[in-house]
Image (tube, rainbow, N blue to C red):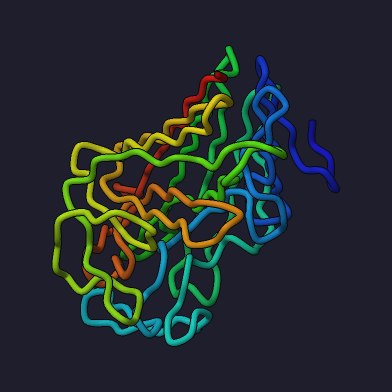
Length: 268
C-alpha cells in the first residue's frame, strides 16, 4: 500500500484514493468506479491548507501584541499555509485509512504539528478527511482546510459538472482578492469567492448521467472557484481568507484546532 513513487493507495468498494506523503499529504487521485474525480498534476489533486487558508493580507498577522510577517508567494499576499509542499511522515496505514503528520517549522513562527487522517468508508461510498493543528508551546491563531481540484468533466465526452449549494451569505471580494468585511446576498457564478454556511458546508457536485458527490463539513466557510476550464474547487475551511486577522481561532495546548470534511458519492 505504501509505495515511495506512487504514494499510499487506499481501497474500498469501487473507490480508490492515493495519498502522497512526499507531496504535502496531497490526495493525488480519487477514483470512483474507474472515474477520476481530481485534476491530475503535482499542483492539483486535493491539498492541505494549514496553518492558514487562502491569502493572508501582505503576509501579516498578529498574535496578541506580537507582529509576524510571512513570506509573500501570491503577489502581495501569503497563500495556503506552509505544509502543502513539504514532505509529511506516515504514522499509520491500513487498507482503508492513513494517518500522517507534518511539524510546523519556519517560516511559521510557532512550533507545532499538523495532522491528517484519511478514511474510506467500508462500503467505498464516502471519504472522511480530518485535520488537526497542535501547538508545541505558545498559543497561536490558525486555520485549516482543503483545496480539492475536481475535474470539470469526468472522462472524454462527459458533461460539465453542476454545482448546487445554498449559502447564507457571500463575502464581498475586494480588488486584492480578500474579503472586505461586507456580507452580501450570494450571486451566481463564475466564482472565486468565499461563502458563509453557518449550519455547515453542504455543496453538491453533479456530473450528469455519471456521478453525484456531496462535500459536507461542520466548518462554516467554503471557497468556490470555477474560473478555469479544466476544474472546479470546493474548499471547506475553518475560516475565511485572511482569517488569521479577521476570524482568529486560537490553538492552545488544551484546545487544538480540528476540522473534518466528508465526501459522499453515488454513481448514476
